[in-house]
Length: 480
Ligand code: PEP
Ligand code: MN
Image (cartoon, rainbow, N blue to C red; front, side):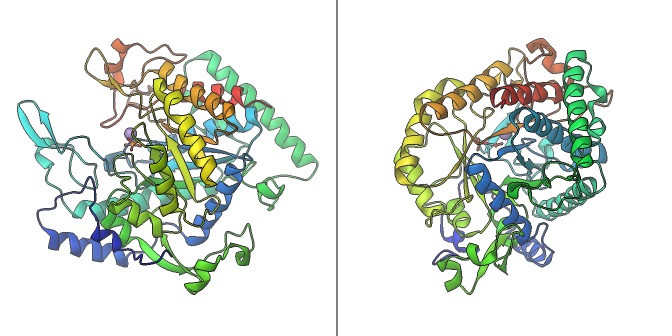
């Protein structure tokens, strides 16, 4: 644990995007209740992810971070959860097949409720109301915009229900690479996309049959990064994440445990001097395996950076065009002073036209500092625009352009893109169609069609087909 740090030391600093609760005693009562509730994830799962991220950092695995911009309580349903997991599995299967690299999967799921906003109020009709801050703070309905602490408790239980079902799906055969057709491809109408995916699943079936024949199947318990097949074939690993925005909630979910073993490395190696001084105890945020600091809350002297520096979880930081080179290094010095591998993922999100302007400087500064980082590209958040019909959208071509610029720039600067962070959804409308929130892709979605099935109440997400297009593109790029 970092010196002078406690799970509540962030309270002495200014928290950007702070929520104004009308009744703070009510908030304190709710947070005390949450403190008593059991962890959602365990220290050894968190250590397992940290270890797998070290393999990503070395370029031996690829990180897929993906899901909704914001989850909503109403969307916690059997169909939505299985469609989300199905999409993440399908996406990663395409990458595994093309790039021949293990994929580490982190969903924006089971807790991704809070949203930072560019303005504290917004205009709805002729009313100026408090902005919607996510289901764990206030309601989307303009009459429910007063922050209500009970929503934090509700977020805990909706996260629990989601995670419980995800765990169930992953341990009951749904995630088995022997049955990839179960992952919701049935609604895909494009014959080309279907054919391409079937070609991969047939190839995979043959490969699985072959490994089974030579006695190297899903029963193998050797971790994939030690030469085994677990986590790649058969049973898969899956991790949860959200933006660590509501620090009262994150504090309440932070628990002290002895340094856990990931089951993948020897614990003695993992205990560094600092933890030993602390009696081998660590503070784990038990609400998710991975948390990230948003682009609006990464102030060096702010409350979010203070909270994040003390937790043992692997963490992400959004890096946008306003991040100065030296600021990035000062931030890394604060959140990873011992330069631990697998600890920090930098999620760059500049906007397609700005990658070449900002990424080379960031790469050079990090290289010079000797900080180990995982570089992933978020090609969504720098590329949001308003369509001619007034809907928030993103163009497929621009998303691909940021992604390919990032791949190219890393390669040109002796660096490597280690993964991608996407907002996508496998969600279907009641009549069984994919959502229409982003323009373009192989289905050629036009701006006029956005209004047909626009379901996001936050940022526009790639739909199933558009996500598959991105997966094929990345997979072709990394083909080996
Ligand atoms: C997000 O990831 O949904 C988000 C708000 O991103 P950023 O902090 O990069 O704007
Ligand atoms: Mn978003």
